[in-house]
Amino acid sequence: MRFKIDENLPRESAEFLTQARYDAVTVIAQRMGGGPDPKLATVCKSEGRVLVTLDLDFADIRAYPPAEYPGFIVLRPTSHAKSHVLKLLQLVIERLPCEELTGKLWVVDEGVIRIRESE
Image (cartoon, rainbow, N blue to C red):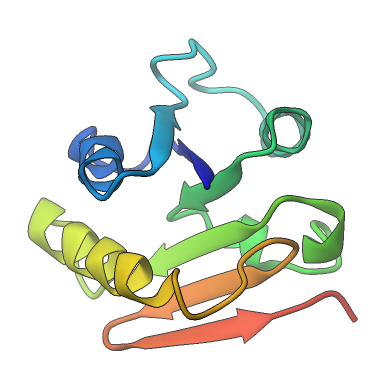
């Protein structure tokens, strides 16, 4: 599975996914920082990458219907401290082998993952 890590996440997020044997690149490494959300979504679609972000705009399934994309993971930590973000990513990594992500939106809160599909 391939992931794109948004610029609002710690750099270590990509390393964390890579250590779990996933392909992860960052928006910053690809020199896409500061770009508009629709462009980022389009690039993720063309690259076949699931976007991992803190940006709640991507949780709007009317604006970004999950079925039209490889998938979205929107993290909602209680704190944006690195340890909280990585804790949520660990929850995602544990769930990946059991649950389909392609074409879905995962909203990840402390201890729970809500999965949505396009309506």
